Image (cartoon, rainbow, N blue to C red; front, side, top):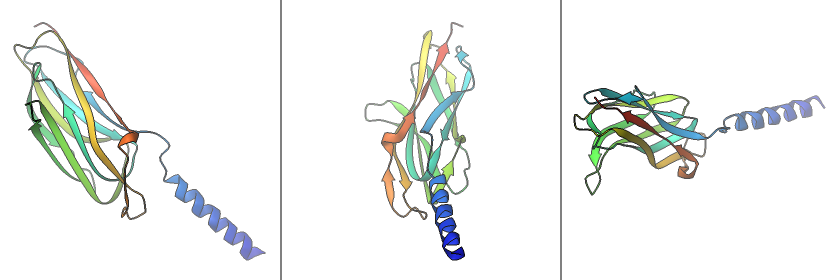
Length: 171
């Protein structure tokens, strides 16, 4: 009887531990601006965060921006333990600029409220008064389905993408 109770306890503990690793919230990827309002010549920093990423294996993220309003200056990836990344400025086939952040993990990682990279822009001297949008898009986001991350699932449909507006005021 005592062995049966111990066995049941061990099974229940195992089940609880397995479900404890499951995500309760939505995976979100979002930018934060250093300022909400700017004028010509101002420097604006955009920080890109990820939250509630469970068992991340690999991902490609894009930060889009409107070159009518801002000029890209630089970008810097944040060092995240066990995550290997490449970050750089690119252009699509029609010349629209964006930043691409590609990452992979040798073993799966969990990230909560984690800064991935920072990008710096300058508001152009001839920027019109209005709002400039910085958007986040996700090409894919792979999750490891087992403890070692050896089987993968593309969970793009679960990714909540974000964006922010920078208000450009007259100088």
